[in-house]
Image (cartoon, rainbow, N blue to C red; front, top):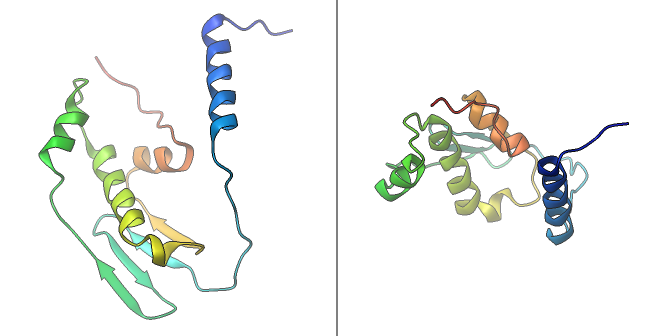
Length: 125
């Protein structure tokens, strides 16, 4: 038998609530189309099927950097690596929809956060 403390019970309740409130997701089967390749460092999109190559780059807005630093964080590489993924997904959503993709992310913390919505990096005080 395992006894759960109140904190852990709260986490389980929150997870169940999130699942109950989440919209339905559709996961399609392999379409047979060539996957899209996205490199997040240069934020470059390769549509191998069409031969297209799209890219963008810019500075991260200062307001975002200030928000990320709010809790005393000084190393923002994880956030900076995730930011272009979100921008690429929003910018090219019509091209990426219902497509298999390879996202090349070269920061382990960012990769973990994107895959599991969690990063095991410990906050140092």
